[in-house]
Image (spheres, chains in turn orange, green):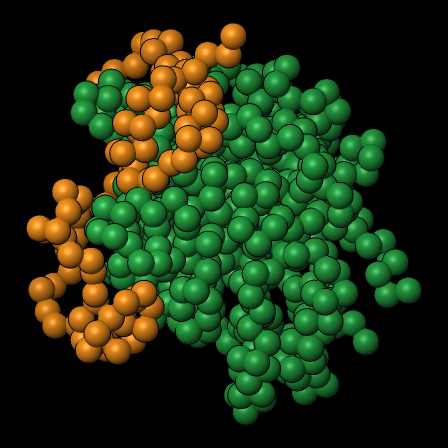
Length: 102
Length: 485
């Protein structure tokens, strides 16, 4: 018997990732995600390291830019890539009220 | 007449003496691309490239050897007004409104962008087969993969379509396809090349780098694209060097380490033998080669799975169907818009990685996995630093096998990680690493070797690579003169 996640576990992960999944996909993910999650368990086999962490291999001091006015993007240009817009605004579905979503 | 087969200095002289014009090179590049038919490009930039070439006729040819030369750009690097898809349905209509810093730099060097190259979707994969637009082919055997994720860039360079291409390397995505296709690919030190305008996959690992057919041209392109950029917080400050400066110097007395893990049973025998033979060649050239043990190399894939998938899940959260990219039609509410857009827009590999990454960063898992991975990552970097106290270079094979068939199964989600087992450690530690071809297997598919050095030692890598390139003197034209018949 192939090792796999439960349907509920897959739905939980898909929820975290904000990705809709079909019943057929759930069946595949039960096996595929299990393989990857088993793989990452191997981290517990590593021994002898200290507590220091490396977030990024980079040693510059944080050097923030001056708080000065820079180049501005044209709203028209920005909106050209937006799937739905009206005037200078990007349109989104109703967020509060009509459904239990969000 | 073929100009792009000539050396870069020959082409430059022809341009300078006005015997040829940039448009001749651009036209030749498009002829090559159409003839080789490798699916290496997602978008061609023909109209603009011709326009730019004509404009350059009025510009005096300076001492910049790259003046007027065509270049291919991986499709995860933003080009203003030119489609930038990341090989994803999610961005198949995306027109960037600004240029990546590297694109501004290649424009400033008067290079001509010929098109955007095919790749694994969002650079996630090892064979470019996760591309929404189908996989590119390997010119050495068109039934085989050209590797990934910068597979299109590798394919078009190997095929001699153009001399220059940009790739990006998060866990080997420049070096591994370079190995499979017999070209030179450099992943520079983290921070060497600005990531501004590179569509992020895993921000602490991503780095843009040059892909070319030889070492010298590779160093020339790194000269153009490197440099401090205030738009990238992780950009290295005060860098201004000529990466070609050590090319031509001998390697007498250089100390080279080969980690035993790199020649262990995970690697095909034929490749191990080629590496050992190359090590002997390097010894004859005056270098000293030792086989050493390194404790953390075999854990790199696990660290990569945790760190790269974790960072990817966060970076790719921006694709929500609202500001740009694919968007679900007639969503019934905001939740439906998010979930539907991402279900429709992302491919299988990307979804898997986002899901696992989201899980690894959620709740107590962040400490259980992600934090632990960062701790081991620090020790892995320390181990490299210690090796470089005693050695100038670490070398080894770039890949465990040569390029495999495009039709090989894709059903094991771990396969794409294991293909990169030898190249991932370099990204973890932020080090520079280069692939160069060192020979062929029994089916005449290229075998590659990676050369790793300490942070910011790219020039030293080019020194070793060019010395060896000269010594090996391989015939690296996959068409073997047949293409023009």
